[in-house]
Length: 169
Image 1 (cartoon, helix red, strand yellow):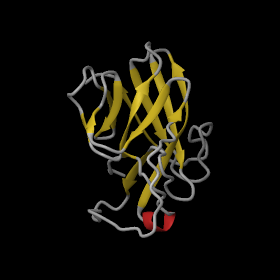
Image 2: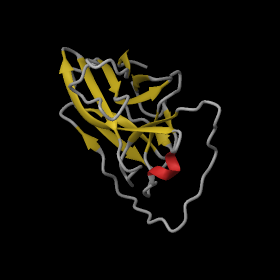
Image 3: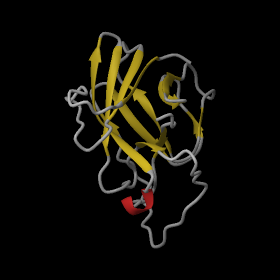
């Protein structure tokens, strides 16, 4: 699938029924191998929860989502960031910039902002706060189906999206 992943965080719950044609992944774990941190994003369950950062993509490239509406939502401006030993996936509701040292995804590759106010972050997005100063690259895997987990390593033939990138901008 040649579809781009985006970070996303909403200030309200979005039921799974509104997300048909989309994939939602949440950070489950990380491990470190030398200077590389390996991230595993598992399948989200029950739609998108308020304040939780996700990786999302539209699996049908022909459908461009420009807007949608939900009624009677409860807005929650707090965050439930995902944190591992090496990385914190940090949500933000307003547009701004990735802080110096923060990781962001562009064209399915993670990069690291070398200085403040250079890498624009749209509203309702998330970035990676790299907690381990020895990390120089980021590798990631996205679970492809409900049976795929962080210990699978594609042993059953399921495919996962993965990429490795230097942590540079």
